[in-house]
Length: 152
Image 1 (cartoon, one colour):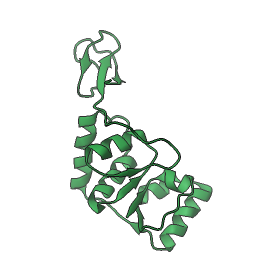
Image 2 (spheres, one colour; image 1 turned 120 degrees about the vertical axis):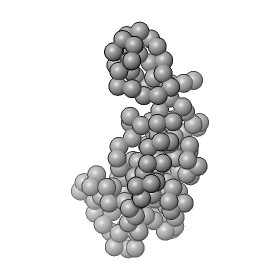
Image 3 (tube, one colour; image 1 turned 120 degrees about the horizontal axis):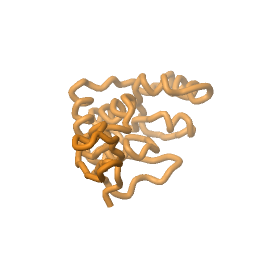
Image 4 (cartoon, one colour; image 1 turned 90 degrees about the horizontal axis):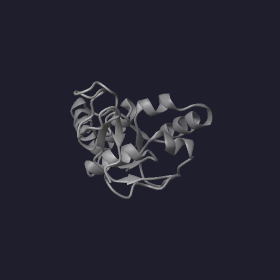
């Protein structure tokens, strides 16, 4: 089964496998992409609503990878749905791919190159330069905003 992110509908993705998505993806789509969603739903695409437990698991994984600040609620729910359905997540979003990989969820990319390695992001204070493993809005020492830093 393929679980489709909005990029699948935007890029007119086709597969012979069974498909699924979530209601929040429909809300992100406009014009022709929205019509593609509705056509696939009419043709039997499964609409799945992930459990709160799975959503919480994805949020924990996103905190562990450092992607929690960049995943939208829709992104989080898509990964949770893919996890529950044991589906391949079809997305071009790098943060989603990173968290999905952390949870052993298979991803397929459409119009972009996929991730080549999983990353555990670090966060650096723009004021004092201290680094943190976990995301905070501000540095606990000097109060300056933190930014995500590539761990490599």
